[in-house]
Length: 172
Image (cartoon, rainbow, N blue to C red; front, top):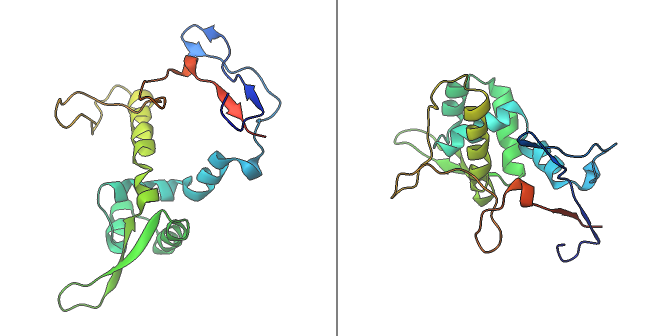
């Protein structure tokens, strides 16, 4: 059990074929008002925000570029960028091209960059479950060995931890 946790909760049930089955529960063990996953979903969980973050991870930073790439209504884009800045996921900076007025661009903060593995995992989930057999349009490989990489859970010593080996502890 993790330090500070009053009790542990085993959310992993028995193996059924090759899938882990979570035991049935009448409600989630963590109330929404203190759940960090719920807060993360509130901050970045809608379609447009995730698409803006996707574009940002590929280097898109300017309002007009987001609008053109995503075909997002300007008012929606403005609202989502403001929300990302307020949440500390992006920072608004000024840039100026020769002969033009200064304009804002939006760069990922450390908090935004920390979403990279989350979005990589979501990409690979899409490759596995939504591709209908098509080859993935992008791959993630080690820079030297060129071997494919994938997101994984690792313990404090850097060892991979399988879902069947994981224990979730609630702090009360």
